[in-house]
Length: 211
Image 1: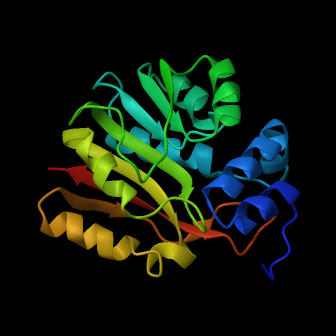
Image 2 (image 1 turned 135 degrees about the vertical axis):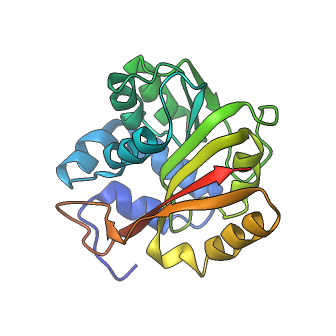
């Protein structure tokens, strides 16, 4: 990439060309991930809790942290009264760190974009932050995430600006709406994912209600 990254780990993640390289990049980065992202002002794991709290009442049922990474969001949602949180990630190394936080009732190693191991309507909501970005998870993964979320539940997630159109996310949003699978509730303005570094990394947050 032409944009220089302050974090070598982030540089390697964005440079990954396939799932194997992405897995390797996160495995190498996992032990330094929290420290490096905190130094860069990475705010998404904490910002997403505001949208969850706005739309999902504690105690309504299990919530899925889809692409939970090291589990930064879990402990803060727990502090807000959410006690039934599950995590999903493709990186075993990241999940191992998430498990040390004591905020997740279950952690599952799975790949977004493939069939997920839960029944229809299992979750009261799912949230996902920093996952729908360059070289990561396809827009098609929203089909499975919507399937495992109950009617009346919510889909809450961020999408990087550069993949909204070219990654087919806008098209997928419309497809699911036209199919009667969900309805749009909220769309944020663009904002920075990193408060200190990486000023070019802009995202939007989206909220949909599952029908």
